[in-house]
Image 1 (cartoon, rainbow, N blue to C red):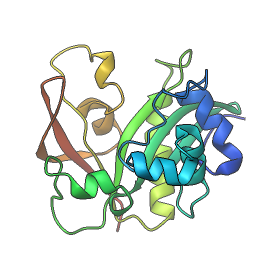
Image 2: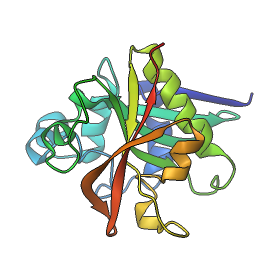
Image 3: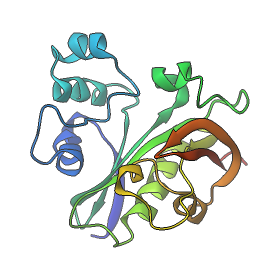
Length: 192
């Protein structure tokens, strides 16, 4: 069986939920804030965050990928074209480095019980492969570079080391911070 990474389509929604919100808490994060404001959540899901995320998963380019190990969903990566992420498009803190139509990784989550087992490496690589298959010339991420062990509150943005292992290079520093640490702009060029 092994490893595989798949886009989060409607038929894989429950797998996404098992990773990011296993108790289906309606107030818990559904990775919506970069994409939708309260009005859009109301329009897409009647105010229900889970329903809004289900609607996003029905789009031609869903909001990310899920990684499986032996058919068990173990990781989530929020990745899509930067232009599909309104909060990032409007951000004065994470501004574009240039005019390349990058795909952006905003969130990486490894399911409880599966951490420290190499999931992150497989997840990022699978996300990059999926982005490449959909025409992405570059994948960008905005991690932090903590001086020691990473605080759990920053886990979702990732670390410099995590993305360096996946072939990303630092190309800048944003004005955004996570727990008072600056966030980097890291890229992996996919076009030959």
